[in-house]
Image 1: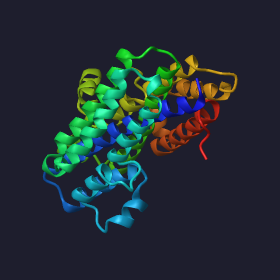
Image 2: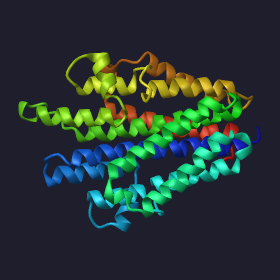
Image 3: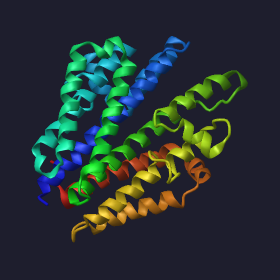
Image 4: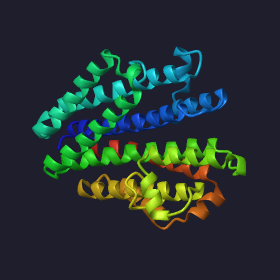
Length: 314
C-alpha cells in the first residue's frame, strides 16, 4: 500500500473518532449545566473542555469570556479551530474522498453524507435549538461509520490502518479526559459534597459510555479510584487505555514492516504496563504524572507510525 493512501486512511478514522469524543464531552457538559450550580462551577466545567484539547490560547483570541454558548460554538462550528466537529468531519470526508478506491461504497457514502448532513443541520440552527440532539447525531454517525467499516471492508491493510487511527485517537482522548476531570476534583469527599460527587463522576462515566459498565463491574457506589481503574486498566472496557493499546498493537502487527520494529516494541511495552499495572500503584506515584507520561508516549507512537508507514509529518 502507498504511504499516502495509508496516511489518508489513518487520519480519516482519527478525525471521526475526535468528532465523536468532542460531541460526548460537550453533551455531558451541556446536560450538567442544566443542573443547579454556581457560576464559578459552570465556568470551570466549560473551561475544562477547552483545556482537554489544549485550545485555551486560540479560544482566548476569539472569545472574551467562558460560557456555554461560546464554548459550544467554538468546539462545534468554528472553522478556525482545527479540532472543532465541523473541521473534523470535513477533514474525515476529504481524506475519504482522496482514497475512495480503498473504501467500500458504503463507507464512502456514510462519510460523505455525514459531512453534507452536518452542514445542513448547522445552517438550520440545530446547535442553538437542541444541542443534545446534535451531539447524539454526531455520536450516531460515528457509530455508523465504524459499523459500516467493520461490516463491509476487507480486513486488509486499509482496514488495519483505519483501526490503528481510531484506537490511537481514542486512547489520547480518554487520557486527556481522565487527567482534566481528576485534576478538577478536589477529593474532599465530605458528606455535604456526596451528592454532587455522585453526579460529577456519573457524568465522567457517561461521557465514555461507562456508567452501566461501572455498575455491572463494581456493583458499588461510584468511587474515583474505581473510575480510574475502569478507564485505565480494564481490558474489556471499550474506551479504556488498556483496551485501546491492546487493539492498536494487534492491528499494528498485521501491517508490520522492517522499519516498524521499534514502534511495535514501544506499543508492546505500553500494553504490558497497562495489562499488569495496579491502580493503587498508579495513584500512589501520582495519576497526573502517569497520564502525562502516557500522553507523551501516545504522541511519540503517532510520530513513529507516521515515520514507519505514512507520509512523514513536518
